[in-house]
Image (cartoon, rainbow, N blue to C red; front, side, top):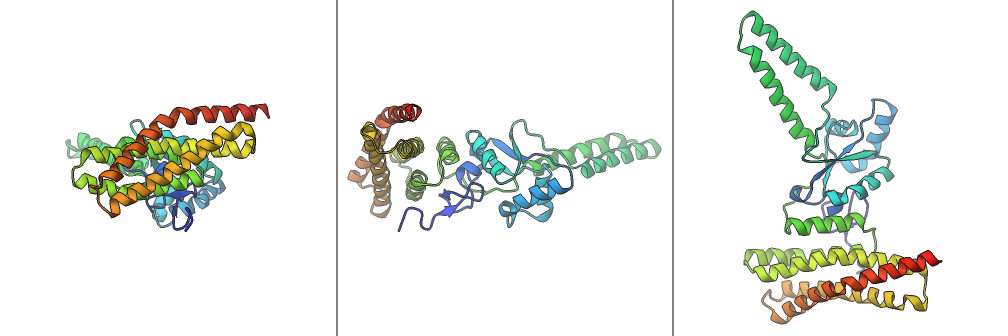
Length: 318
């Protein structure tokens, strides 16, 4: 079975994703705690542009949002996705390539634009309360504005909730989830991404077991591996693309060796995680191998950076 067989694919970027949710971590498949940026479709006026955007959104929204919510999203009134800040540019580019103009807003500052019909409804409530208060019930003079404000806040909570969401609980600590999301946001479909997906598939059940057993030190080894693998996958992709562009020359021997070493480290990591899960989380030799792998990835990070720089210089000279 190849690395890409039986892998789920992201509905936004179309590349392999690890959790079978239809959204990769970089495009909104991360838990809410890891996402601090809301993606809204840029507002369009009713007409052909709105219909065009709505049609482009259909593959993403079908089965995820009701027709009324789809129209709100297309008009820019409701959030489409919630993503980590480090993934926002890649997600915006993926959406733009699909004909969906979008913009990012911080969750701490985002204020969804309320549909005009709802604004008119709120104005009507306030006006009716003021008139009723003036004629018969003075309490309505202040109750109606308060009620209108509460309705507005409730509308904001709903409109800020992304139409496309996963409700996935945090599998790993938030820093690890964010690192994975940023890696997926920058990795195209290919070997590096697929290896990272396979590593997560192997790490997730083991991490849950270690969490239940409260084996903190060994759980942290798994988390450290994922943090380093997030960066290493991007290094691997950069090196592979550089080697493809430069071609087979003597000057690329070092970069080629580093690429082969990275591929081996990913495969070793996947094998060790599966071994620990299938045999015993108390397997000391396997844990020693996992620890050595974490140390090696950390120590090799500088060499990967040098290889990327060398390839960039070679590309600049061609």
